[in-house]
Image (cartoon, rainbow, N blue to C red; front, side):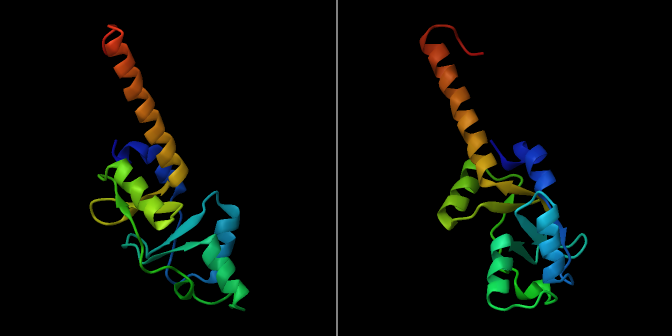
Length: 145
């Protein structure tokens, strides 16, 4: 399975914020939208960074200003995946790096979604279950369905 197979799940999770936004703007977006991460980019531009709720909490715990620029708190070294990537490879990348969310990029390196680790695991388990059932059917002489 490739990541593009989950586009109906990954696309709605995409919430982008401009590099000119403030920490307060990001906090408002994260508190009102049903997302766990914001992708920082200029309109139609490539990914410049990401901001999570943890990034904002860390910033505020260090007496950070609410009106500081989002670029002061964003993670710049962004790990991403492509729509063409194998889902298992993307999931392994997330597990190895302890990531809950991964921006999904199109062929032009523009964000088109956000892959959540739970959705990736659910899809992988469903795929494994389907393959297992096919093997059971084959062994039982039923054939493939």
